[in-house]
Image 1 (cartoon, rainbow, N blue to C red):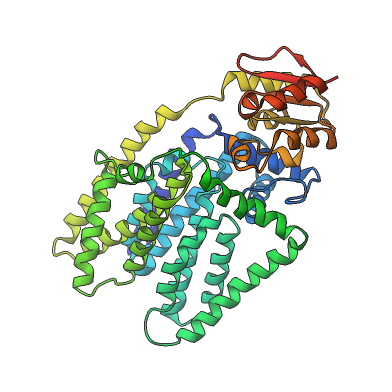
Image 2 (image 1 turned 180 degrees about the vertical axis):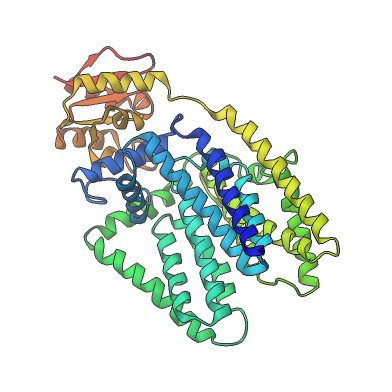
Amino acid sequence: MKRLAELVVLAGLVVAQALLFGRLVGTDTDYDEGVYLTSLDALEHGQRLGEDVFAPQPPGWYLLLRLISILGPDSVRGYHIGMVVVAIATCLAAYLLGRSIAGPVAGLTASALLTIAPPFPLYAHRVLADIPPLGVGLCSLWLVWEGRKRGLAFLISIAGAAVALALTLKPTAVLVLPPFLFLLLWGRSRRARSLAAAALGGGAVGLSFAVAYAGVLGELWESVVGYHRDARDTPVLLDNTHELLTFLNWRTPFAWLVLGGFAAAIMLIRRRRVPAVWALWLWAAISAAFLLFQQPLHDNHLLLLPVVLAVPAGISVAALATRSRFQVAAVGLLAMVLAAGYVQQQRRIVLDQIPEEPELVEAAERLRRLTGPDDLVVSDHSIVPFLADRRVAGPLVDTAVLRFQTGSLTDAEVLRELERYDVRAVVVGRAFANQFELLRGLALRFATVPAPPGLRIYVRR
């Protein structure tokens, strides 16, 4: 009977997550979303990752997008739905980990707290490479803990494979390694065997990707690692210390539950209960330290914090509540606070229901009329070619200001790639607008045509 009640609550929680995360499906896109969508479009039409298509993320991220493309419609709305599914799966991973460490109430609380953890609901639908590695990281922690508890080496091998898979989605997944090793080496028995099993699983995944992309490993290393390393010397966008100190909004139940969860963890460790939860608080501390020194810091980087705070806090506060003499009252109060947080996030998310910028939609329509289905185009507003259903020359899928600041892209290189790929049209309105040598080169090679306000459209003469 208890198991059935747990499944009913879990099903209700999944429905609540779908209703919350799905409210922003099909709304406006940000720049990086356009980059990833146009990159995927280029890959699906024969261009190759690393060799043709500039890849700021590892190959696993693009494979995930291709999987979503196979399963759903090839549109902004379709990819948003796919990412909502990934976000819900991440919440389910939090449930599995919490349940394994401290029981059903802890699992449900961890999942529910992540659901209402700002800004997680605002980004759950976005085509960004931040949430998927966190979800896979949570799965790896669940698998390694289950493997250690049950003494099953094959589960530990799968856990090691999951860590490696997370790294193929985004390099910041390396932050999950300390808590993974904490759980892997917990206790005194079979440490060497467990470490060998995890290394075997991780090595198999790493070797598979190395073989699959053997011809472009140097190019991928430069675009994934070198490019972001060089970006550290570019102008600061956000104040790291300020963002971390003000991340918890004390007007939200989430902030108070995180504080309460940390206090609960201290009480539990003093009573020698649920020691494994400190592996997750270690993850939170390491992630906060990483964000403190990350340059340049972007808003999407802060998506680390909802996950690494919500999961240990949810487990800790639930574990303490279920061990209280007033268990029913404590769990009931916890459920009420979580419900209040859900209502608050439903009201907050309405403010972000913004349609795509009409100028970009109009530019896409004009681009579609001016070019043929097989023509290649380029735009510094990355979503425009995708909305126009036109392919982009692979080296120019990402033309962010950051690429020019790091020297990853220059005016001369842009002009050279336009010629090499025989690009038919160029839409300017963002980074290109401040590259004066590039604009002069465009004026020599292309004719200008009427464009929406704030944009310029160049068509090859």
